[in-house]
Length: 272
Image 1 (cartoon, rainbow, N blue to C red):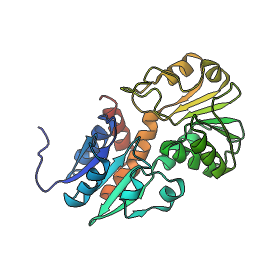
Image 2: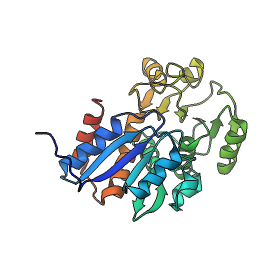
Image 3: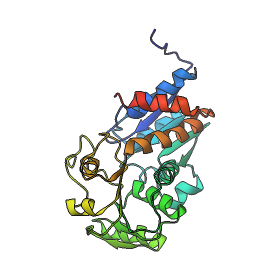
Image 4: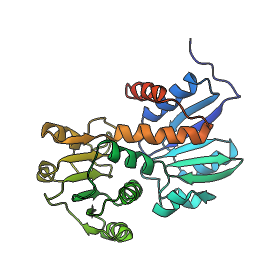
């Protein structure tokens, strides 16, 4: 039987330039499994400012924030969690009676995946990108003790600022000398102008031992397809999505789902 939608339900949303059904299916699966009166819907806002104002007026309990809005949304909020404030990027908003607080759960997800895959912190790593997601990845790397990091970004101002924040170096194009690659750009994302491109030259991937791509859609990006063909250890953006979404879910509802339920929600979301 289809789930009944009623006026008593609490709405949560995601705001993205290119929304997918992954988060929608993940959260709604858990809401239904735990019999929570919540509903989740993804939007591509015509105006970010108006969308955030709508959170106060409707009211909407929470919002997941995706590229390219993770830094843009900050001036529209009332308060920032220390982690979000420190990196200048928000991926989660929680509405408490009209007061909007920004968090960043991407940091937790990236840090846990690096540990789970036993990525060595003492080898050269290329962090590709300089936007909000790259800032979250940088914070996770710094917290985990990575100290041989090079920020690879076309935007010199943003790239050097991110690198200087952590005592790292910057370069505009990656050279084939890195053991680990971490792509924090939208290159390879489905539906984009660069959906079939690689964020680095093939030779850079050939040199690496571990390739981590935060792009969640498609499940296997061009970068990860090449890395898999070359026998590299691969870490996928879909895993980032699931881990950070659990943290969002708990902030929205006050409920921490079991690992079994999270695994089932993850599998269900990837059917989208």
